[in-house]
Image (cartoon, rainbow, N blue to C red; front, side, top):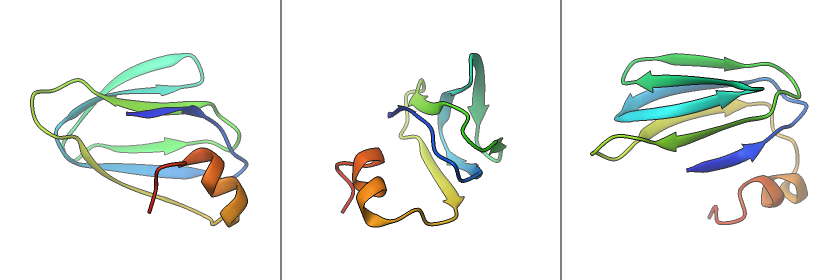
Length: 77
């Protein structure tokens, strides 16, 4: 699960495996393998695994600095 958060950078998600529930602003959408999702700048968003297998996704956005990244992803290595 990635908790609801927002940032200035636009972001894209690409679902590699599994099934998830994506929230963008106040909209919820089921996402599945091979789906691509665009997140506009400053839009609150997050994702949660809702399937029986591991949810694997690729995400990309412009870097926004290590201090802010630590806030958004506190458990990232």
